[in-house]
Amino acid sequence: MTFAEAVLQFALVAGLLTVIPGLDTALVLRSTLARSRAYGLATTAGIQVGTLIWGMAAATGAAALLAASQSAYRLLTILGAAYMIWMGASMFWKTFRRQDGAPGVAPDVPSSPKLHRELTLGLATNLMNPKVGVFYIAMIPQFVPDGVSPLWMGLLLAAVHCAIAAVWSCSLVVGSGFFKDRLAGSTAARWTDRITGGVLIAFGARLALTPRA
Image (cartoon, rainbow, N blue to C red; front, side, top):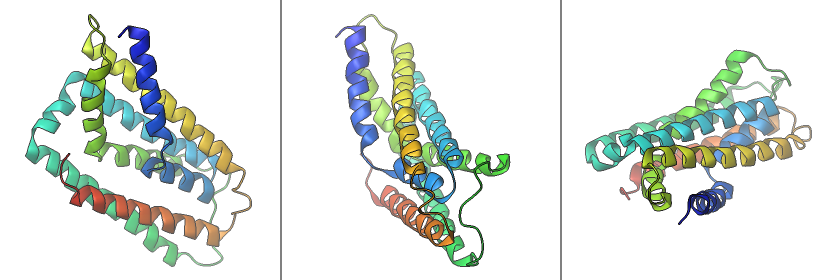
């Protein structure tokens, strides 16, 4: 396998996995539809930073140590599951506390602290999922050509994955942004948060209950 073939084949696998709807998709759509494109882009940025950190950890061997330690892996899994369930429950509960007259959609130019919270949500949700690190440990060695440093190849492949995922997420933000005006209003915002909160709770529960791969 040549260097170019390795990158192209990994990009194909990463691209197929990226377009499969999952937690990242739910978070990006929720931020865009219930708030604005700026929120969706902030969530996207947080998710991709988390993906890059996991890729760097896998390339340097840190993720391999996590995968080798049953206790460390289980601890991170429980913490991640608890975080996702807590975030999902918080989203769900807050929708019942909003008054009907309260604005459900943020202005087009939200304040920096609110954008920062969306970025943190995407980052923390990604980092709290140890299965992302295990994915890199399983995949990256298969795409390292002979004579190429596993460290630098791992970093490159992680960057390729981030680029593909960023393009896909940005397309979701742009596409769903066209529907934002039709969904504007507190009712649509509440239901968007309820659905996303339910997805977070379900994903967290599955993460906690699924045996280690």
